[in-house]
Length: 194
Image (cartoon, rainbow, N blue to C red; front, side):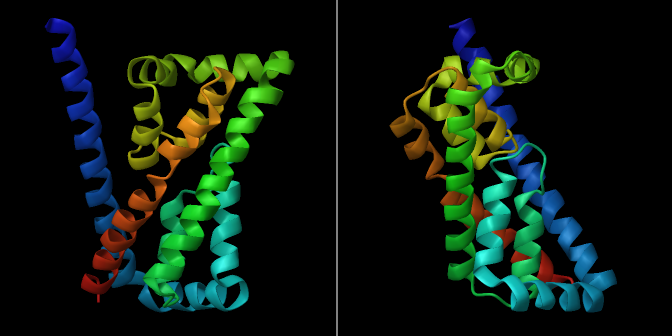
């Protein structure tokens, strides 16, 4: 029973971290919209006009296949500031994210084990991510897809430790939920910052 209590505490902590993360993003976007609206609208409009949904797709593909590229929230700000539709934004970013995560999964499964540097790199983050994978399995991917737990790192980890791709992919579908929630949270921060 004590073990269950520890798991409940970890889940509650992740939920709290997620909510705090959303609130921080809303606050940051509010401040950006309030203090830097003109340049941000100009930059966002340029981004949307030049790259559109394809730019969001490839941005997320890179973001979720490479470690520490650009957080998804930056692309959401560009899309909202550039007046892209919610549906187009959420779809292009979610699909790009899932494909980027799939690429990270494949790198974890096939490339990382072949190179000493790759194995050492994963082991550096293994202590943080592997316990989630062992405890929650499929749900570890869902947690990474929805919360501040780095999705790309989880993809590398579950690939390296041979989770089936189907489980990984099904958990990754929760990126649609994450993109939707953050889209509307950022949108709220954007419109209230005027």
